Image (cartoon, rainbow, N blue to C red; front, side):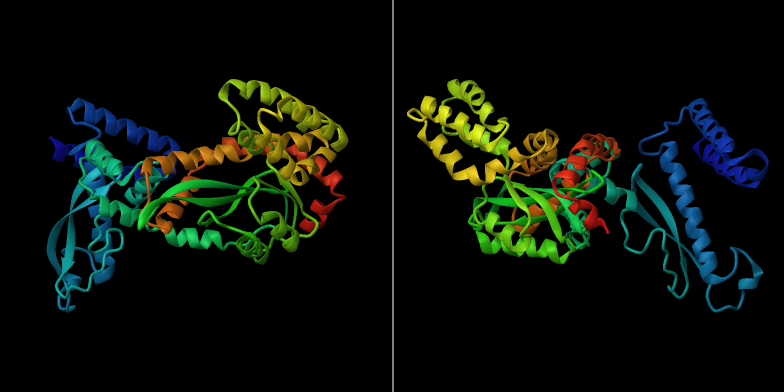
Length: 435
């Protein structure tokens, strides 16, 4: 029954090819799909799973393509008398199982007598079709471990794929990661956010290590992650000078504002590389760091007391509100007062700007949505054997962001008012950089 059904299906495909010009491709595709599904249901044949219609159809299509390849290689069709005396001919087939995105499929690969045939659609020693590699990388980017991916493939597709094989597949992204890390960048960015994600790396002993993410907003309002850099937690001005010089060498001639979280040496490096750039402390991180010194029962009160500071109309007004905060809370939490005093020079710049600019600088949306995806992937791994494995994990998580593009549209619309404000506040530097 299954053999007859598959024969009918392939005949349907061939008939479909013959009648494209008469019926139109779109309508014909729908008719063919309906025919295949109806016949499968009528004959009690499953559509998916081992031995299902999709697996059998994949088998027939692959074998048909391989037959076409060997015909091109030999120069004559099967059983064609023209092949006699050519010095090479078909020499039967060899059975081979390949993992496809519909599950394992056993195919018969044609051979020739002098073993010069090199199939392309399913190459020699190839055990997986391309779609499987893409699926594995996608699952890894969503945070699944190699063991979880292996179990998923076994449960859903009945395929046994080792953890080492899965690791080998995901290693393919490293070449793309290197190319991405060195790609040319725009000449000017309104804002670059620099933040750290902490991961556990087993280098002799397991230790927390930061991976720094530079997320920029383009002049069109798009989100663009410029690169990833691994640190050891003791980074200073020399380290940041190297990172920022790398960005400059990749084409970034000007940045209006860099938002960061009190990273030692970064403000000095920014001034060296882009002298006109404003360094702005991330207000959200400043608030979070304040809560570390306070009892949980006082968090709401402290947040309420600090809000007039970072929403003040001017720097002078902000200083007055902070003096009031220090008077009310300084005796109980002197570390919070010291934290804000030390960060004051990098805190106050945004007070001079339009509310639209303040709003996007204070918002957690700019980088937190990216960090949330990265943390989810990192947390699933637990710890990494080396720095490259950690960077690979973060890179795959970044590449899987916003697959539908819906988030990109919302992001762009949200940034339009702020971009107009940047254009005015910075005297046309955005327009000049785009020329």
